[in-house]
Length: 190
Image (cartoon, rainbow, N blue to C red; front, side, top):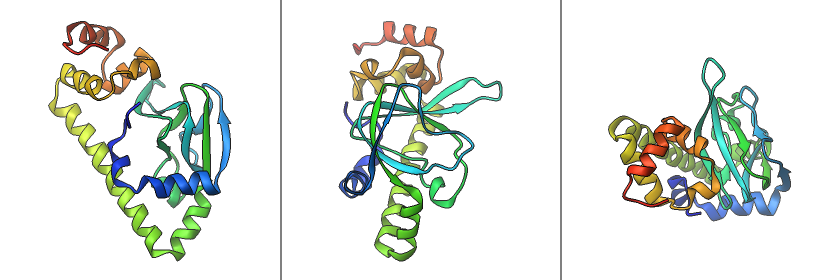
C-alpha cells in the first residue's frame, strides 16, 4: 500500500527505519493486540515490517473511533507524547497480525537529551505529524463525505484489502451504511 500518512515523506524515514530495525527488537502482535493502550505511556516507537495497525480513540460511551491507520513500511508511535512521559490518548491496535521492530522510547529520550541533531529530527517529525493531522482536520471540516472518500480511494485504491469497511467508515467519520452509499455513488472504483 502506498504510504497512508503523508508526514512519512518529511521525517527522514531512513533514519527512523534504521534506528528501529538496526537497534530495536522484533515483536509480534496478533490481531487485536495493543501496541499501546489509551491511558498508558507508550514504551516503544516502531517500524511495521508486516501487517496493519489502527489508531483508536474512544467516545464517552466507549465506542471505538478509528483516527489513523498504518501498514507495513510505516512507523507507529504515540509521538511525541511518549517522549515526555505523557499518557496515550489513543490505543494502537493490530488489525492483522503484525511484526514490528520496536525501539524503546526511554532510550530515544536519553539520546535526545545529548544529541542536538536528534532533537532536530524529533522536532521535524513532530511538525510533519502536526501538518498531516491538521490537513485531515481541514478535510473533515471543509470536504463532503463523498469528497473525503473519493480522495482516500484515489490515493489508496487497495485500502479495502487492508482495513475493514467499519474501520474505513470510522476514519471518514461516517456510518458503514453511509460508506456503502459513498462507494455506490463514487466514480472511483474500489
